[in-house]
Image (cartoon, rainbow, N blue to C red; front, top):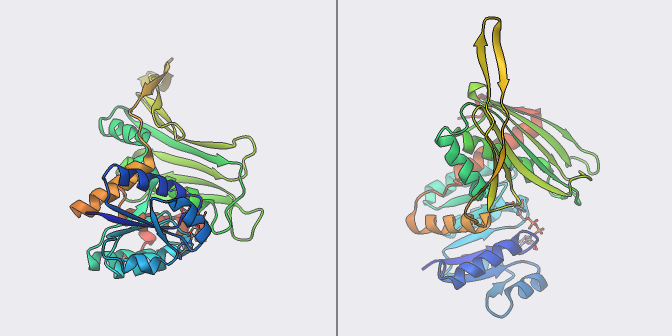
Length: 335
Ligand SMILES: NC(=O)c1ccc[n+]([C@@H]2O[C@H](COP(=O)([O-])OP(=O)(O)OC[C@H]3O[C@@H](n4cnc5c(N)ncnc54)[C@H](O)[C@@H]3O)[C@@H](O)[C@H]2O)c1
């Protein structure tokens, strides 16, 4: 028996609500309650078939609710997560796990002490295109990986509660490490632009450096008039290169040209062969549903999810340090 309480039914919480309702109907979970302090919103979303409350504490005292899913503003993740763990619940919390390293460390420590699952919403780990790319990296299909880059741009009203680093850059800082199988890059550096609100950057560029001369780049923007919504990932390798359009859940693009150098009498000569871009069909999956199903699996098995609490902490550490100093290096993290 798994009972879930969803806290927060706003812009993103609505998508969680839709998936949880589906999972309830499919028998993946057994009980579902929605919660939001905005009664009009939560009542409408609950419709006639899901119960709802405006007080998250009533979820925490409900013995049939085993876990909560926190999709509230990011500065509430830490207090709500703490209350939920202390009430004996497993916790899924949207990204960023918290808004400071101090809070993230405390939450991880509490979850460890109380033996509770704490899972941050690092959604892109569950994108079917990313899963395919990860398998291809493990199989060595790229040859030597040269660099990765992401464009995550939109033309939309900027958030008021956090800038693009906590809202968007957190995905790339986590995902590049996940793909390359490391905890941290050797270094991450950012530049950012804060134009419209004090202390909330609407634009950031990120550069990460990894072993073997691999670099990772990302551009994060809410004010990109020519790219209404663009989110993609490209990996450039010596034997193959791949592009994932995050908006598409059933295909990726593979370039089979070889990008290498060969030794000749007068030194190393770059060889960039002709190649073809082919569309590779992959099994269609909704990343959010995959993510929430992984949470349910962890609740049942007590095993850590693919997006585990330590990755949530590391992502917050990197964003916080980059915002403070403009760069992050793992040696600056206190043990
Ligand atoms: N993984 C992703 O790709 C992704 C995408 C968008 C947002 N998010 C994250 O989701 C979170 C929510 O973002 P949003 O855009 O949906 O915000 P939002 O403001 O649209 O919604 C937040 C909701 O939480 C409710 N709320 C606030 N405090 C509450 C409390 N104590 N108890 C119950 N309800 C409460 C609000 O009334 C509101 O309905 C943020 O942390 C954001 O970073 C993640």
